[in-house]
Length: 106
Image 1: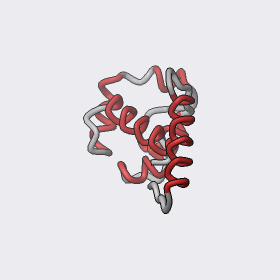
Image 2: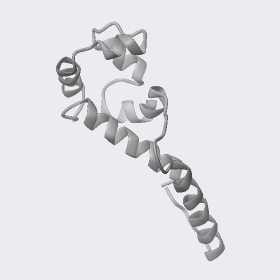
Image 3: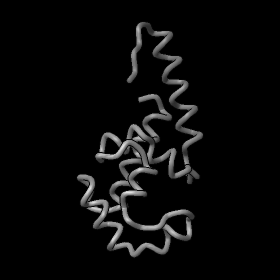
Image 4: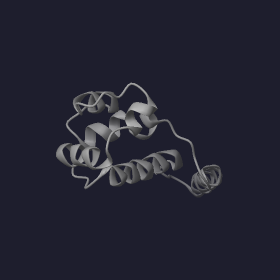
């Protein structure tokens, strides 16, 4: 949340946001646990973090290959059952927006 008390502070905050926006431009590599932060997961599901959510899925997820082997339709159904998202892509998209907003300080 932006809290600005003077014109100099506004200018500094806008400059900071512009620098961060430039850094975020293009493709970003973000760890799943950073994207699905405890704040995001706990506000959109009944779980406190991504690890707990993955464990509750009933799928063996110990590696990226394990995760990739889960049928998309089954994973989407799990996401629908534990959140208000219609599918995994919707959840990731919202998580990405939240991550970028946090980086920008908004």
